[in-house]
Image (tube, rainbow over all chains, first blue to last red):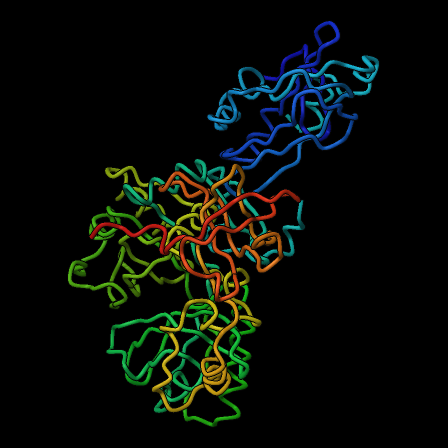
Length: 125
Length: 370
């Protein structure tokens, strides 16, 4: 369920680092807690995110939740799939429904994030 | 997580938990917000049938020779116009015209009225009615009867067919906002053709200890129509599409029925009722703000409490807002200055500090085909 290659935050984001690029999404646990997702607000390309800062929001039928940058860096790409099909976040949160790709400014930050086993015990899975 | 030990529960709490419903603190009650998912549940009620546990709702019963006099004293609609077996929507108002609560008044007999009230308001409502009763001195009794009833709502186009399998009472002749007492699943029930979804269906009031069994029998009876249990999340999207008010959102102690576009529940022809003088004054002076529907034009969702602007100036607030699954757009209700409260007005809703364009539109947003 939760990929070994991802790192996780307490706010239920995941990040996959490949080279100096980090792909960021929300976890399956997060999408389940949110319920039917109807709207995703993502940042503009090129802006620089600081680790822990809000960079967008995910809205379910009932509520709005902020999404926080798990790592610092510049936004290289946002997932255009989500504007027209936000429900993909419920269906494939660890795959097709990634949120943003970030050019890491400090790759060592990744070590501060939870491993899969730490995250699973965090959510009681 | 909230302290569930402090929350009130319905007789079906264990059933909800066992079925994997997601539970939330709703005004002090531990209630299911969703089972299969809000959109799926919403669509189930619009197209088939859904079953709701609304046992958290309160009931207040007024009995005695002057029961009608007390009801018509505390309620803004006109209970004297009700026939036995008929119900209507009304306001329980303060002297200043604001809402204590919105209520459903059922006339059971000439000397017996059954009032369905909001869960988190039931004790406040009861105390308000008792105080009004003490001051006015009518010959009747007031009972805070919430714990005596479980309330289930069977809503959707297949609602009547589902319930009909479980009762010998012929349901077809029961008209909208009418009710009868009869046997459902072998026990006495009050069977009312009312609801909070905009669909056909019934609400039944039964003994709480029977609720788990009756819940199961309704689900079994509705299986052929693919009935599903429905949580408060879909209850909210369903009522919002029909522009039904929710206390604490469209109405509260600071808002009057005239402002809330509910003038039809205020019967000024009735000589006296609590709040009449204040509302007459407000009517003569003219209201300054009014509840109006809107749809989002820009990308974003106007949510409860968001500021509404007109040409950059703050002028009002969103009372309820969110996606309308049946309509496939984002809708909401907001208070606006009367001059701007006509359909077709462009407004801006401050979504997370960014103005997003919206437009006022006629309500209800959704009306079922008859």
